[in-house]
Length: 358
Image 1 (cartoon, one colour):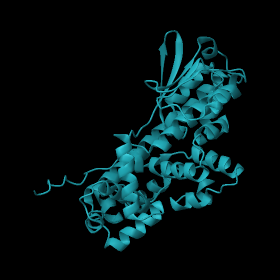
Image 2: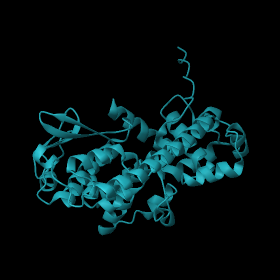
Image 3: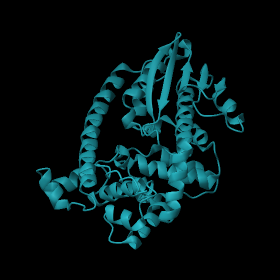
């Protein structure tokens, strides 16, 4: 029997390689790990985030970079509840100007809705939404990438919920307590930390990941409310949001261009010509995004390699060719740099994770 024809290489790329996320979660992750005697800086350097970059207010990271650091941090600490601890360590100041706007808002509910509206400026790695249900105010979290590693998924949801409750207490008082917190994941082996942190019933295997807030708490007034300050801050946030949209559009267009051209990577000059701009202008715009063309192309090629490794019928030589590497040795060096392991071991990890999700 002959093998079935292999499907064509994916023509595009996902948004997970775009460096558009403020690294607030990673910064607090480093702080929490430091307190436990674990240095994550070598791990950050592996994904191109050295200490100088991490101190830069202009730094943006990709969903892929953030996920890689989180996954390894959970492995290094051996702490399955690491997300809860990172979320509980945060302050509104970590959100920059958006945090200041929330402090100047009118009520807790409106502040949460403002945070959801401008979530792309907060460093969030989950997708937040709100709704009213049975007289209560509900905040829901979803993952932008349903295929994310299970340990990363757990971390992100728990970090998000812990930060919402922690920051709400800092804003409206330490007595704030949700009506209920619901997780879609199975119950953990130990639940003590959940009760101590949330102070309310916590449910698992729920239909969705949600925090339910009683109306009285939703109406709680923000202690720093100031309509003038709030309005003027939103003007600046709107401008930042528009700029971020332009930056993300640029990165995605370039990523798709690289992905469609593999195994050949277009030169920087060719990309400038394709987009009717000068190399100097394109380089400046990428710098404004906190990245370079070389880093962007590397991210696309890395994603292509991971996609191809999920196809057991492909040899490493064929994967190297399709991803634009000169030979298998170059592929091995790249995978070692990206993941700290070999292509064969990475393939096993990816296939196990894919089977776990099915």
